[in-house]
Length: 125
Image 1 (cartoon, one colour):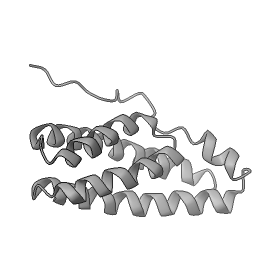
Image 2 (cartoon, rainbow, N blue to C red; image 1 turned 120 degrees about the vertical axis):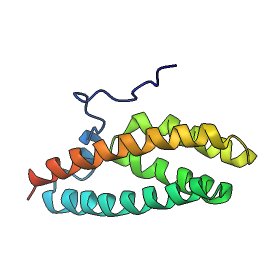
Image 3 (tube, helix red, strand yellow; image 1 turned 135 degrees about the vertical axis):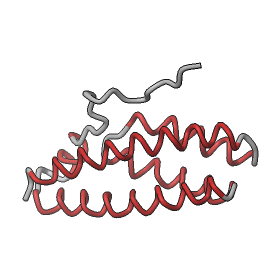
Image 4 (cartoon, rainbow, N blue to C red; image 1 turned 120 degrees about the horizontal axis):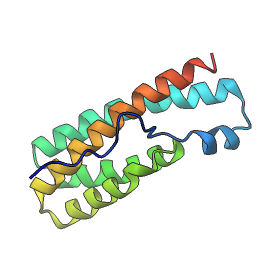
């Protein structure tokens, strides 16, 4: 069975329009939010990877719930259903194989989002 690729290389995963409009185009605030997000998402990915590796359902649930807000602000809507499913599976304390699949997807999309935001951030410096 061929594994589906959640995002084509040519597609953007971030839509920063909401955030830039919400902040009124204020460059210093936009870059601050981007920098905070980049730091936070890297820490959260590391933590969720560790939680998956140790089958820590409580931490998976907590992190996936928290990450939904962060990715929504950055317009990474493709991750919301992934994180919702991770949160729901971890509530039941089962489905670790599916959680691993979803986590792989989460990592791929987050890597792409990080690259996009780092490039976009340069426009505001």
